[in-house]
Image (cartoon, rainbow over all chains, first blue to last red; front, top):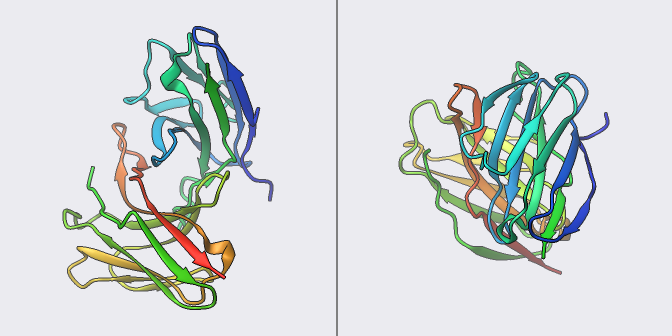
Length: 116
Length: 113
């Protein structure tokens, strides 16, 4: 089965510019996550979707970050305007709710963002 | 969120067993223990998980202490491909009551040829 797809793989922008990341989860996976991973740290959850609804966005900096999953499949994460501290790898993961007994989240390769 | 404590790094030799420890003294009765690993320039991948009993799968074994305050991931025969950052995670709940993973800094495993 195809894995979680993300694009672009790399992006370099200047501060105050905007950027968008795209994620296509594994087919049939209702739950989708966006994580931010700063160099040397573990991934931090930004937002979780269940189908096209937001389950948890408590750690999403809503003044500059937004995310949507309009048809319950693909998702986009946007940053506007970007700051230097947004330089990180942005990971998308998906999960098949109810796929007992596995609780495995499947991660994409990530998008490495550099803000200069 | 319940926290886990891991060494910052470990080294092992190829084809030898390696035991990766994790402490989770504040674990609750319903917390599952998950292990993920992250190879360089890749997203994390699931390794194994358990609740109370020891678990085995094709990748590794998970030994859970009787009081559940610690666990050990066992790679029976380390290969160069096992060099990665390993995360020991207690599965928690989001604000919406759904499941989430809270990653710490993890532990870097180096495998020497």
